[in-house]
Image (cartoon, rainbow, N blue to C red; front, side, top):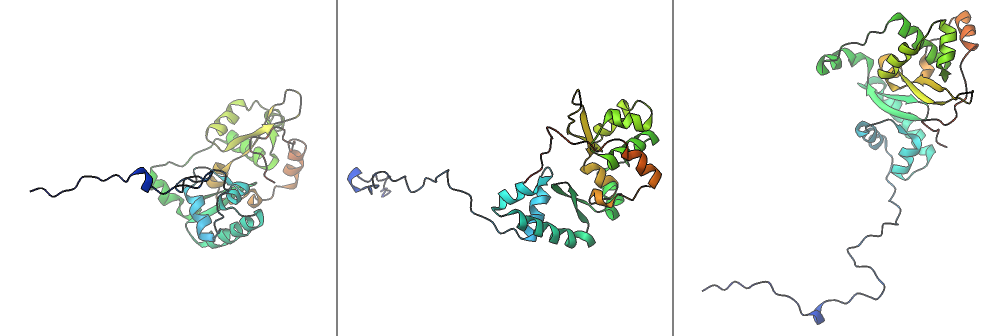
Length: 223
C-alpha cells in the first residue's frame, strides 16, 4: 500500500497577510546605497589584480564606499609592500594598475611566449619626445624631429606605448599624445616621476614645444 502523501496546499485563509503598502519580504529595494566595505591593503590588491583595466582613485572609492583620502593611504601602503615582491603598483596620473616586476620579466616572457619588443631609433626618439613633453601634438613632434612622424606615431599607438589623451585647443583641434601603462611596464617604471633627467641642452630644445593643455580629455581627471 502506498502511503505517500501528495503536496498539500494551504487554504488561502491560512496564508499570512502582508501589511498594506509594505513590499514582500523577499524583495530588495534597488534604491538603497551599497554598504561600505573596509578598504584594506589586501582587498585593494585583490581588486587591482582582477581589474581588466586601470582604475581611477574615484572608481576605487566608489566601489568601497569610502573617501579619496583612504584610497590614497591604502595605495601608498600597497606600493611600499610590493617593492620587494613580483608585482608592482603602476601610477599614471589618477589611474593605477598592477604589473609584473622588471626582475621577473624574462621568466614571464618565456612562459607566455612573448618576444621582446624592439623599437627603431626613430620610434625611440619619438617616444622620448612624447614621454618628456606630454601632452604633445604630432606637429610639435615633427618640428622637434625635423621629419614626418605619422607612421612612427601610428606604430607606437598600435603597440600602446603612446595613447591619445584628448584634443588640443589649437586650430583644427589636433590630438594630443602621451605615454600609457604599456610604456611604464616596458621601461620598468612605476610612474613618470622615475624618468631620468635630461641633458640641459635637450631639455631646453624640448621645452620649446609641447606641454599643451588638454581639452575634451579621453581620461578625465577625478576630483
